[in-house]
Length: 284
Ligand SMILES: NC(=O)c1ccc[n+]([C@@H]2O[C@H](COP(=O)([O-])OP(=O)(O)OC[C@H]3O[C@@H](n4cnc5c(N)ncnc54)[C@H](OP(=O)(O)O)[C@@H]3O)[C@@H](O)[C@H]2O)c1
Image (tube, rainbow, N blue to C red; front, side, top):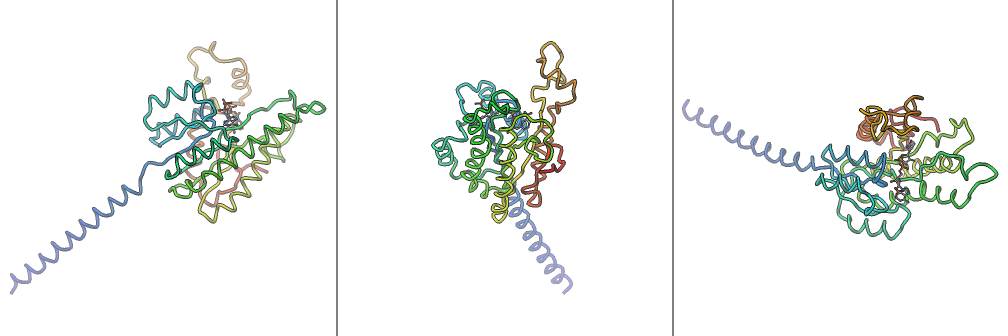
């Protein structure tokens, strides 16, 4: 009798063990599937911030779709792609509808975890934008690229983002887009473009919230993407960078990592909030 009981208990234990093993196998399989390699699509990735983002996301093991206007001239980006299997270079002018449509078609079934809208006409100068001498053609081009271009790319790829795990559309803006922070009368078109972009992305974030998509609006600041701050030979540092370093107006190269960390932390609560790269909330 005791023997039969022990046998029965043993059988239950074996069955329980097998069930537990099956559960473990199934769940570890699911966990593996759930931890698929994330994908980031970056615009304007042939230079400065964009190129640095490609480098860092590639080093983190992400799949990187690195887009730029003229891949045949993007030597540094092409070199990066040659060294990293996880980086693919694609052509994308963010205001070219045919190019946008072609890329959407090519990546139709690819979930994109982070769509990093980095490309912009980045000009913080007087030049032809001085009052009394405003070049309206150039002004319109800046607005088109910096506002409409980002929106077009975001709309075009929103289904890819919605199909991903992280579901983030990131908008690279500028502190120059803060209306309450304007102190000097320069860069009217650039400032207007970034203020307009902030409004567009904030409004867009409300529509996308229902789909679970997070819209991050981030001002990256002037980052030392070439790591001039740590240059072994100071004579290689361009004079404008020397001045920026002296004036404390340059954020270290690690700011790119800080932004990637900030993007990683964003939740739906942060959607449509205007952030500086440090994680500080900026005034509109
Ligand atoms: N650097 C700063 O201090 C700073 C400060 C605040 C905000 N930001 C913002 O941060 C982002 C990156 O700035 P950055 O310093 O890296 O600028 P950048 O060095 O001037 O590079 C701009 C990038 O955008 C690309 N681009 C311009 N028009 C485009 C178009 N129609 N289609 C596709 N790509 C286009 C450029 O490509 P091409 O080489 O083909 O022209 C380049 O790759 C921008 O959104 C900028 O406004 C920068």
